[in-house]
Length: 112
Image (cartoon, rainbow, N blue to C red):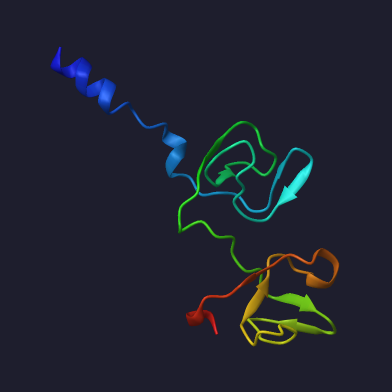
């Protein structure tokens, strides 16, 4: 009886919960470069490049990673840059070609 109660209160965790989010991933014919909250109250990510029903909730460890080197304007960058950002903050591209894809994120202070 006690084992059933413990199993009910602490159900087994699916093994894929510890897997990394895949960025970018395609969900609903749209490419996503970060966690999304579509059809959910909480941010989640896909565990496959093309969403196959395998997902998990995002944590603070899951932001998408910068793609280095990346091409911006006529330059190649190998680290975060402040160039082109009007707030004088560092940023990076989430793809190899920012000019084409326009996907970016702000870098954390230790990245610049």
